[in-house]
Length: 272
Image (cartoon, rainbow, N blue to C red):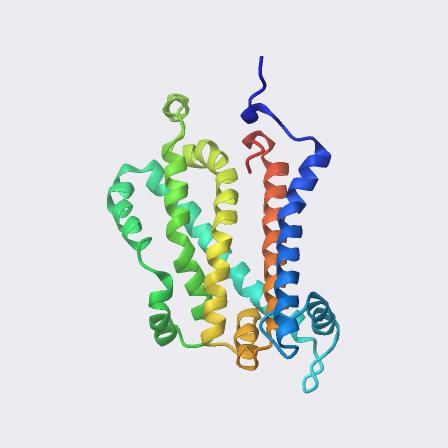
């Protein structure tokens, strides 16, 4: 019988090779484009050489600021991660609780289902000026933007996951005398916790977007603020270093959440 492509599985060495191949090709493509531009104009700043980016990264990670003495990249990272953690945590809690209520209680579903769907259609960045007016330019507005940006998605995802729980499980719980609260905590909650982690992983991309946007517009600290601060000097080596660092942070957070899910809920499958 002929082996179809959909049934073939790459071995470990081939898997590693295929995983690294796109990154290597991207690096080669960038290096070629950089060399072409620098050959035409050695003072070109748009595509700095990879060696220049590496030197800049080493300097940003190790050298302190002349005025404050602190290493700005690490300080910006700490500030941005704190804002991200608070915003995503609040959104996850609201999404979990509200999703449970909408998924389990028909009256709550009738009252909030359409409302949450409409909220999810509002572009969060469009209301950023309103947030600055209402909450000011401090930390609250940045955290609120993250919460508003990803909470509707989490609520809809959690509520749908609760609705998809087999009816037999709910009926068996009621037959054994379980109250609505017990069913929510002992039947529904364990079923949707792996999905919550997955939903948070999926929402991290938009969360980073909202964070960077808020920091770029109104902040004096943070990764987004620093990127938009140096853009006026066309310091692409600094910008690319920060972009690569943000990408690495996002990847590490995603990997940590995936590992946590596999250890806590191994029965949920490898897809998490």
